[in-house]
Length: 413
Image 1 (tube, rainbow, N blue to C red):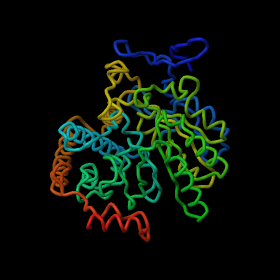
Image 2 (image 1 turned 30 degrees about the vertical axis):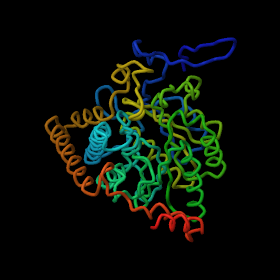
Image 3 (image 1 turned 60 degrees about the horizontal axis):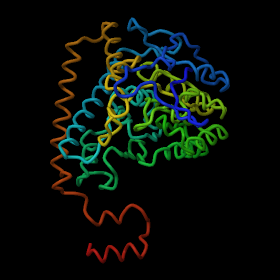
Image 4 (image 1 turned 180 degrees about the vertical axis):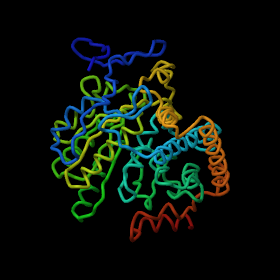
């Protein structure tokens, strides 16, 4: 892996990205050539048999929009169209929610623009009973499991129908019935939680897999290393996903060590099966998730997957990426757009066309608008109705302690 420029003062190294605002985007220092002919070992293989794949870039879609190689999951056209539908739905939802935030109707939002395949393909490859421990850019998992869009919007509005009762920031979803664990703003906590859940599932003899997602920056936190150790030692049925979208808020991936080795290679030291995949290739993400799930379900242990993608928009609505990276960087990303790539593949197969694509986009846009009108009927952030005041004392203790009873009495509720 080629090193990007660094600033070295008196022996102290400060990594620097290859380009800053005003520069021409430069991705030449990254290994971004998909390995379309990468070997696909059996899911039961020793972890060491995957280590070359930790430094490759597993891909399926070629430059001619075909699917090739041992990792091709051979998905029927119906499944591919469903994947395209879910990714487009995620993007339409994101676009509307961002506009609502800019209008002051919700307080905060984070888009997954350019990363839709990471969550949508994985969500489709896993089974409904599998437990998900997401980060805050995996709303596609919810759509892959057919979560009600109105319920998601009610949460973001913090209205009377918010299933979290106004206790979480927007986009910090939870959905018990869908096996979707509560998103935490404290990044990294979900990794050891996922491993612990997987260990408990295995101890109970359950046939389930647990999957979790973090960003590249979070790999620099202790929770990442603790989770990898436990996953390896106890061969937990868990999939540990690292979404390398090149930027952690305003710091680039090199600050987390991405210049020195791939993030997938970190799994090697723990004895984990380790894969690095083109995160903008829907088929490749589906294939590696399917492989890792089969490995875990059969009792062969955990897998660490690095999804190489690009955060095409701001980190959040409180971020301005033009201050730390070139404006044209997203459009220059060599791995392209995941939706465009799957769409073009389907067209090449004769299973899709521009007219149907435009009609689907239009229908999804209308669905989002109708859903928002319904969500707004249950209350708005500005005008309510919000969750009732007594609810702030509920859902924590089985038996409410005296000091909370006293506080509730003092409020007269």
